[in-house]
Every structure is written in structure tokens, then in C-alpha cells.
Image (cartoon, rainbow, N blue to C red; front, side):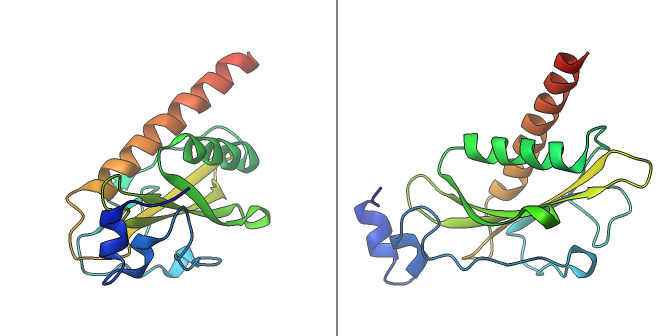
Length: 164
């Protein structure tokens, strides 16, 4: 896996652009989503259950599957996304992080994921997608969160149908 000429030139200013896959991106480690502080810049999107603080960009549904099942589905969806690579994983905590790179310039974004037990049973999901560089993302992170949620929901429904 290599990068093109444009990413190599950009790496003079943005070092992670010149690296392939998840290389050059610092893993976030275990994230304390209960105390998440979002930057004031618009280059991010947060998907979380209703009532979550800080207020999410997108409300995630209640999933009627176990934490382990939902965490596995999220991993499958991430693996199916183009130019997306695993950065970090804490399966015992149902947390993971991924790097998604832009096609032309190889700019990295980080997607942090947490699956929690829902108070009424089943699971709830938090997705936090954000850019490493820049102030604006041209809506890429919000579009990514929505696309992932759609793919996750489709897989949950498929798995539930297959189990019946």
C-alpha cells in the first residue's frame, strides 16, 4: 500500500497525509464518552442516543441486539468501507477507532466507536467522526456517520431476520 504524489506533497505540512492506512495517526485510546468535549470547529459529527451530552448531530436508534453482536456488526461495516483502517480496539470495553482517508489527498479522519448496554435491554451506539486537519470537512463526517448508521441498521435487521 502506497500513497500518491499529492499526499506526499501535502505531508510536508500535514505529516499523516504521507502515510498509508492507519500509519501516522495517533490512536485515541479508551475514550471517556461520558465526558466527551467536542471542539468548536465544524469538522466533526457525533451520533449518539437521545439525551446524550454533548448533543449529537444524529440520534442513534435503540438496537435490539447484544453489545457483542452490535460491536461485531460495527466492525464489519467499518471493514467494508473504502480507505478505512482499524486504528485501535478495546473489545472488552466495546470500543474501537478507525481511520478513514480521503481519496485524492489521503487526509485522515478518525471514527471512534462505543457500544453500550441500553437501560431497557439491547444496545446503544456512539459514533464520533472527526477530522485531524482543518476547520471544515465539507460535511464528510456527518455523511459518513449517516452512511455507517444506515449500513449498521441494515445488518442488524438482516441478522434478526435470519435468526427467526
